[in-house]
Length: 145
Image (cartoon, rainbow, N blue to C red; front, side, top):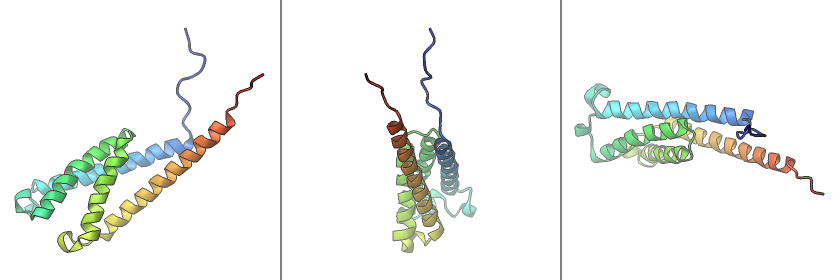
């Protein structure tokens, strides 16, 4: 028996662009995670960022971000609901590091700016998807006798 109608609705251009955006952010999160792991194992920074050589605040921040960024990357790539949540935790950690505690971690305004831009673009996409779905629901009507 064949179904009367397809079970999956067609994706709109906004859906496709949103998925592309999430996957682009996922690749950048994976890159951030790789950078933190390379620092912790001594592969980058000429070994000066090894875990055993770091101060306590750097140990806490770098190990947390080394785990959070790859997990956020996976969630964003798969477009599951927990992906952006984990990204907010990781991005919030970096914003706290470089924005509120520059005396410990050093200032890095570029990272803060990039996270804010990604968050704004994400919310613009969510708003446009919500408006699009709302418009689609209004178009659907049932003819009753």
